[in-house]
Image (cartoon, rainbow, N blue to C red; front, side, top):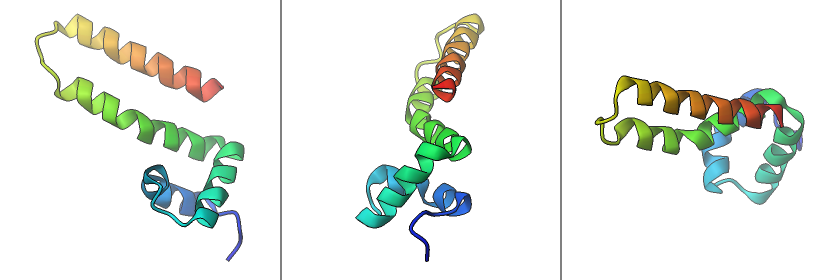
Length: 85
């Protein structure tokens, strides 16, 4: 086993990584991988965004469709900005 995990390994363990449920050596390996791999880092950003998106989606549906489209555009802009960082 190598110290740095592959993209496949990282993507299958992102939930456990985010919850802090992996051993320290594995968390460090994934953390380093995420610093160098934009694809996996994007998956991690998406995973972190899910609770907020779910809260918005499952919240009161009183907003007009135009407001919902505006909120979706704002979320997409934030994700794109994070991706560029």
